[in-house]
Image (cartoon, rainbow, N blue to C red):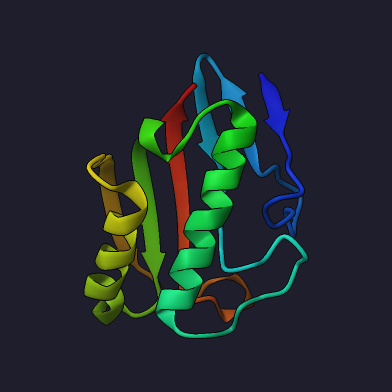
Amino acid sequence: MNIVSTKKAAEAIGPYSQAIVANGFVFTSGQIALTSEGIFLDEDIKTQAEQVLKNLSEILKKSGSSLEKVVKTTIFLTDISDFATVNEIYAKAFGEHKPARSTVGVKSLPKNAKIEIEAVAVI
């Protein structure tokens, strides 16, 4: 088991790792719209989703994986009416690759984020 850490994505804001590699898989922690400098992008859902996917991509790269190797994602939204907008941004990021996915409406997220995404990928 290996802990993954990269300065190209937001650092963990609590007692957890950006990701863990175990048994040929990488398990990312949920990502919100924090830049690699630790600035929270308290903006619209589009801006937040793009930053979240950028963070995931950088963490996966550092793990020896990529968005193309993701097998499962979980998306948490504070406003489920953002589902269609997130789908557009998500589809653009993943291209033809379509991992299994769950999307869950939640009451709130850290830093009052609108979106959080976690992923599991193969190495």
